[in-house]
Amino acid sequence: MKLSDYIVDYFEKQGIRVVFGYIGGMITHLVDSIVLNENIHFVQTYHEQSAAIAAEGYAKESGLFGVAIATSGPGATNMMTGIADAFFDSIPVIYITGQVNTHEYKYDKPIRQQGFQETDVVSIVKPITKYAKFVDKAEDIRYELEKAKSIAMSGRRGPVLLDIPMDIQRTEIDPEGLRTYVPVVEGKQSFDFESISALLKDAKRPMLLVGAGCLSEKAKGEISQFINNTKIPVISSLMGRGVIDETYSNYIGMIGSYGNRCANMGIANSDLLIALGTRLDTRQTGAMVDKFIQHGKIIHVDIDANELDCHRLNNRIKVHSDVYSFVKQLNSDKIETTSTTEWLAYLTKLKLDYNQDKEVERFVENKSPYRLMQVLNKYSKRDDVFVADIGQNQMWAAQTLQLKKGQKFITSGGLAPMGFSLPASVGTSFANPKKTIFSINGDGGFHISTQSLMLISQYNLPIKVIVINNQALGMITQFQQLYFDGRLSGTSYSGGYVVPNIKDIAAAYGLPYYAIEESDLVNETLMQEIFSLNNCIVEYITSGLTTVSPKLEYNKPIHTPIPLLPEDEQNANMLITNIK
Image 1: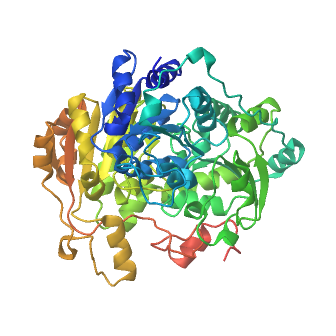
Image 2 (image 1 turned 180 degrees about the vertical axis):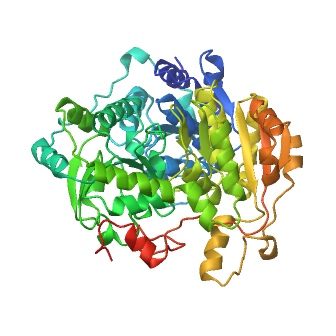
């Protein structure tokens, strides 16, 4: 059996049905083996970065690992943005790069390169993978595949990479004689539930924070049961959106630098935060970490012990555990909270007075982008998927979309590469082609990833591409307005930034096109027509300066984002008055 056939056969047995990539000389054997397998499809993505990110979308939607492949040299280096993104956001993907033949590889020779397009990929990606290996012995292929899958899917998940020379790919092997990998058995997790139980019972103002570590179906099931049992108020991180049905009456909103004002004010008044599967990074807490839950405790649950130990927040009880096991134990022990009716009433009023719609009406001058998100709330259906790019579009979506039961919100958190949405939407759609996907983009991120439009057209994927065109890189223009006297270098037409003709791009890729403005959003006939299409590009034209509100300034406590409330109003809405 040819070794490349063995690799594909292994992926088939793991349930993988799609491999994303861009063909090149050193990966041709693997691509040909995929083509010869009737149960796996090779998707030529027209750019290796798109392949790497599409594999992330596939993993997120399928619950399996994603697979992306590329040739040596530039093919491998083009994938690295996606590899880093998967690493920082804990997405299990197996990346395979082709490499020059072993007799051409330099090994330890003190030269830069021996074979054409030879690149030491493994050394480059080690800081952004859980495991990376140069596989130059054919007899190791089963061991390395099994090890790669085990590492990618266990513990805190993440990407792995196997770099396989061309002559190794075409080697004939005996599958029965290959050595296997035996996974390392992790010790059973244990928790001090006595102290945790006491904290929960004593807390008068508890809150539950859900992060990306809560997104597995098993974890979501246990969290739903815990919420039903306790009626505890819930907030989410950016990456934890979609863990719960956000129509839940005690869901307060998203926290963080661009979080909902009501959620940020609420968490500042909590006396106990149960933080599940979240790093509690400064984009959530604000840079003034000493002011975060200043008068309360945090039960910090994370599967990564390093995240627990290497943290600046001091008021934490560290629980090294996966979310599912921890919450299952809470439910099994019937741990209860004693949140008071006064606390729930306070949060309800905060949510009523300072929800995102109220924020927009009160503080946002150019409401146009938020109006679009409100329309998406109206027309989207159960199980729809929103995939947001990076920039203002991401925050308008995250602040405003209210996720119904079964809906998902996919975006990039740790690396945040512009151009994420389109390839991630493609990967998500290949994992589940029955779902409707809304790919939300700014004009900048859209321009970076237009090659993915070919895949939407080519495979008739159910993806509605929304491009919010404000003719600017809006997130940076807002920054430039605040700190650089409005000098819009590289972010606006006057600063050298130009948006291509999106109508012509749609025509080039064979996709239906609509250009709409804010006034068109009330045209129900037009909206119904757009939302009934399988796929299309909708250019939403927005003129004038756009802003995201609320926004936390650096070195300010989480509960005082700009625009600032009047001091007397701010103080009147704080239960804890001595937070400085």
